[in-house]
Image 1 (cartoon, rainbow, N blue to C red):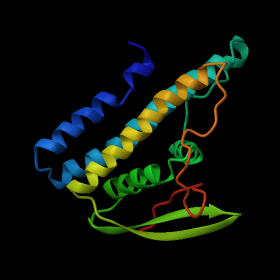
Image 2 (image 1 turned 30 degrees about the vertical axis):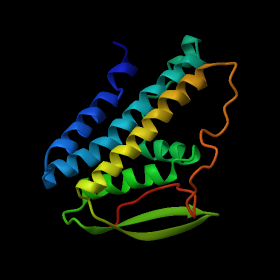
Image 3 (image 1 turned 90 degrees about the vertical axis):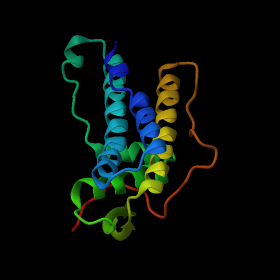
Image 4 (image 1 turned 120 degrees about the vertical axis):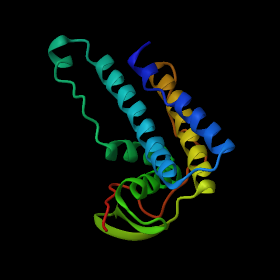
Length: 181
C-alpha cells in the first residue's frame, strides 16, 4: 500500500458515518470525530502535496531539499482558493472547539485578512449530533475534490480551472485562523 493510500481518509469517514447513523454520541466522541475529520483531510492533502512536489524535481540534489512540513494553514488556504470556503471554515471552527475549548456551545474567534486588514469575528459554535452529520458531508465534499483534483493535476493534458462552477465565497479571503479565548 502506498503512503497516499495509507492516509486516504475515505474508510475513516465511512466508519464515522456508520457510527453517527446508528448510535447516540457522547461529548467526547463528538469532539474527537470533529477534530479527526479536519486532520485526516489535512494529512491526506499533505502527503499528496509532498508526492506532487517530489515528482517535479527528479534531480537528486533538488529533491533532497524537499520539505516534509505542511502547516494546516496552507491546507486551509488552498481549500479556500478552490472554492471550499464554507466547508473548510466549518470543519476548522469545530476542530478548534473540539481541541481548544472546554464549553460547548461557545464562541470561537475567527481571524481573517482582507486587503491587508486583520478582521476578527466571534462565531457561535455548538457541536451536536446534527452538526456532526453536516461536518461529515463537508468532509466528503472536500475528499471528493482532493481525489479528482490531484488526478487532474497529474494529467498534463487537462487544464485546471476552478473545481466548482459557482464557488462559495466568504466576505473576506481566509488567510489565517486563530484561537482567542
